[in-house]
Length: 209
Image (cartoon, rainbow, N blue to C red; front, side):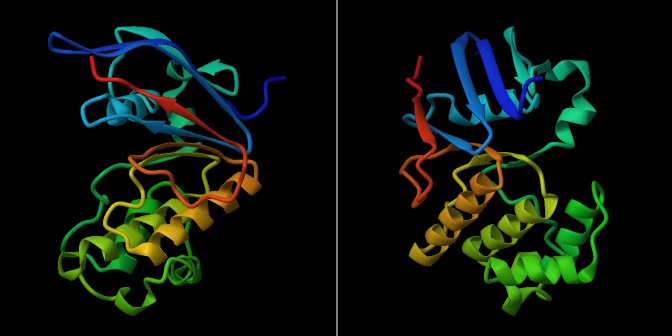
């Protein structure tokens, strides 16, 4: 029986006439993190979106726990959380309301669950403020609370420390360490290495076509 792992085989992706991903192979197992690096335009975001089936591949396949993800996308998506460049927050909802609806559509949440997650990321002070009034760094912390609340084994993170100060970057490192310690799988696109203590991490560098 194949354990918890994400594997990509010969991924090819075109955007117009540009070959964004050219034969990418990777494999990340339980308790491991892969940091995807590369210059702007190298395809880091495209790779993450392709791995969670938000972009259509011209060739190749993605396997989760040994099974092609296209065989049951709903089941695969229930096992992952994807955090992109922009936190998926509704401007007129408070931080707490955003989490209730964003995460709550997939799993039941109590108010205590939400408050504990907000406290863990240092966002309690603005939990009742509309998202439109929050700074970019504050929104990022709320989004990180959402990542925690999904309780998913697979994290796909695109520059998760963007707009965060040194303390916020340490927070991201701590959340990643905890996820890996629990046997989670993480693929993260970064420009700079994150302050992660866990040694089970590797790097994939993409080059622009």
